[in-house]
Image 1: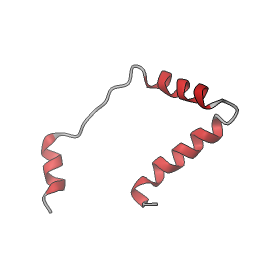
Image 2: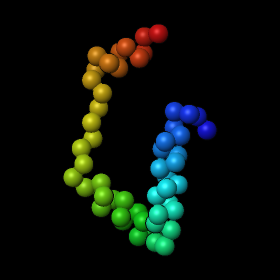
Image 3: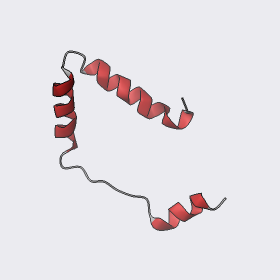
Image 4: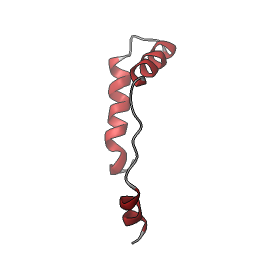
Length: 54
């Protein structure tokens, strides 16, 4: 497990534990319902170039 993804890994298990009484279908429906209205954002193009050039 990489340190860069440790936060995501912990969040996944936190979600599973907090929704342990739900079925997989109910959990998936709750996740999709929670996603509505959210915006997908991207990094600015000029900052991406800085990471690619090393």
